[in-house]
Length: 548
Image 1 (cartoon, helix red, strand yellow):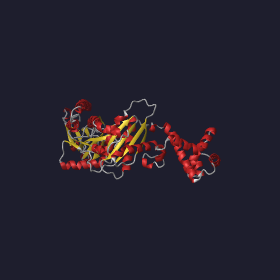
Image 2: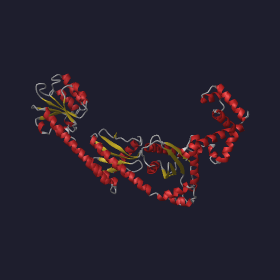
Image 3: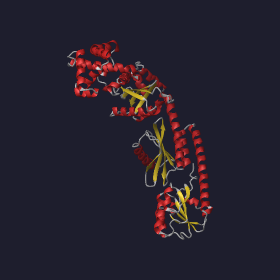
Image 4: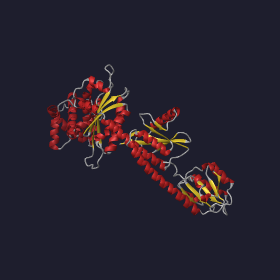
């Protein structure tokens, strides 16, 4: 794609109708591109300008009045017109010095016709020329897009696409990847490349990774970069951009950039999926871990590429379960197709990821590439990113749960830590934390058989209340739970139950009748709290999609 579609002021005055024209001021602004040609005689009419217009005038609206003509010219400059062509005659026989000085100050081309000329002929000629160039630009864009599709199917697709892009725009282009080395076409001197890379690294690290639109970053007064994120399934893969020197971007340049970004996204996603298919051995090993089959430490170390004496890296086990709305009819991405994107996200956070998708659940084994000072913060960031991408791909109403085991040291113990993640996932409704380390009492409940141990325990301590609630449709069990949770504060419990304090007193009397007056003794209270939590867990577990 060349810039031939742009008609500049300098090119327009070379047209036959301008053979008697002369540039009397603002010659340094002749490179400005013309978007349209407009006849305008008064400053009041300038409000209809959009910018980029070449203005034709006879001076009818301001004549020889200094204040009016300067206001007229100032308004044209403010509205970003690209030049003023004036026909000398009865209204303005010559261009006053004050207009020339103002035009020179703003590099605003001021052109005069020394002989009468038909404005309608000028507008028709330039408009026809503009439209023809724009139509040719659209044809060039279409041809460029077709050639990109062909390049995307060849080997070495990304370097070829970058070279093709640079040939089309005839500017310095770059591809910046957060975890890799930027690519520059054409190559830059090492000192310039190092400086530009550092500037981009600082800039891109501070912006939102979910932004998808074109943006710019001013490097100097005359130089800027224009870039667009290369996105796939809501995940940032890279930034494609170009360096503009003494020039602003235009719609055709941005369309060329957008087409190239789409092609690069396809190539990168295809590469990610191919790499995902090559992980068959890792997947088989991970399947053994999920199935809790014993795997020798030596085999795990060998697969990780660790020597016999090398200290094994720390690792983390994580489960992610999600549920879509049952009435959703729109076809969305198969869950397992997110694995490649998840792997890229986790790699960027310094984690080597083993991933398996089964139904609506992902199982992760996350190995630290380098020791992490604050693993919890990294894992929280990982959960945030995985949740964002999943909702973007599966629907914003998708419900998502996580469970994370304790940090692992021995690779052969990964199965045990996966069981911890399973427990954290099952109790997240109660513990309000996805980390196994935060479960507290629920770490014990998970290992107690539901039937008959837990059921009998609940019946022994809450049976009379459950029977009373069932027979009288009362809420004694819930009242006791709130009363204990508020540390026996009657006022706070009544507020949370939305009842009068007298009503609470009446309920507490009923509870004492059912359980005995000593139900608040320390040993009885502890057992009641355990029974209440076990009851809530068992009731929620029946309907929870997390445990299915």
